[in-house]
Image (cartoon, rainbow, N blue to C red; front, side):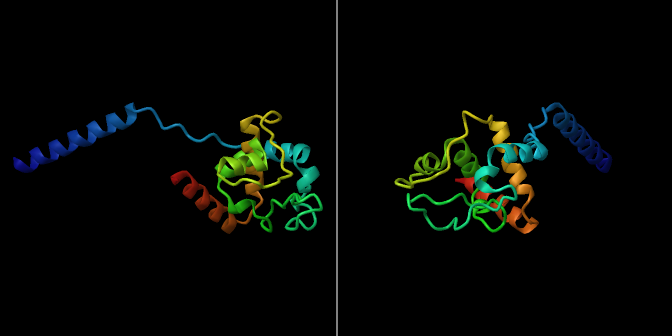
Length: 153
């Protein structure tokens, strides 16, 4: 009798948990990014400076005569993947100097303009998804970890 009561209690608890789980609205999934759209936007908006193959400009690590660094590559040879998604989004939306200033880095001359008035937020995220999609798995994993670390701050 005691065993039957235990089984009945467990079954009722399991059924109650199932009903609760099914009644709670599903957590909103992060919207899927449109990599093909991101690639098209990249070609139209970014490739003139960062290169059609994401290769960046020559001598991108050395400032030009104006003190501004050339556009870096967005492939695995560059440093884009060294940053979390939040920083990358802000860098594109606000522009380089403003994004860095928002994080306490002042006096940095950047040639990167802000695109918040040109691209919708979703379009910026699609471009970033396209760029990420070109990286080797290992680099994608490192960048994803940086994004998680950034979100934890």
